[in-house]
Image (cartoon, rainbow, N blue to C red; front, side, top):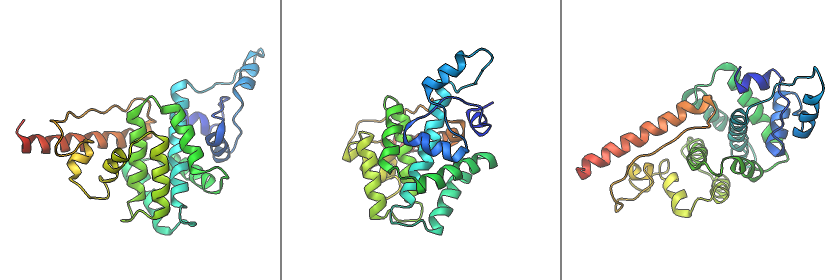
Length: 241
């Protein structure tokens, strides 16, 4: 059984804690047990509470953080428009190719995050605390936030402020953020932006890793790798190396 199946079935006894744990608990319709309480319950003879592995817990954090932060960005201007809902739906179907159960789970997280008293920054900090040593996963999250925010053809001032806040929490420099943004808001050669370099840089080498991602996000990561490979081949042909 996958991490998602365990959570939907309410069979886990391991808490996320923090703002993401609160959203996940509300979305899945059952409370997450505190880790110390879980250890105590496991010590009782005959009381076996299957938990999540560390990797499954990380996947739950990524999944919950992704749709929680998207919810807050969608509400950045005070309301969520029909177009923004359609953008998130298209992202779930076309980019992530989530099945029906996963889409319903994502929508539950989204709805609960929208009304949560926790802020976008609260979600971003908890996500970063789990993945701060996995730069490629952090960049994938930032790329996803930018992709969805710009999908309607415009990044509003409110969305921009949240995106900049995320970039600071994720330890991106202004130039790194601008390069990521230029993949979707074209101000420079998008091929160089994809490879995180400019036209004066030495010959680039494409590198990407997607370990630790929920399987629901693997296709999105794979598409990013294909985009990087295509950009690399384009620049390689131009430069003749």
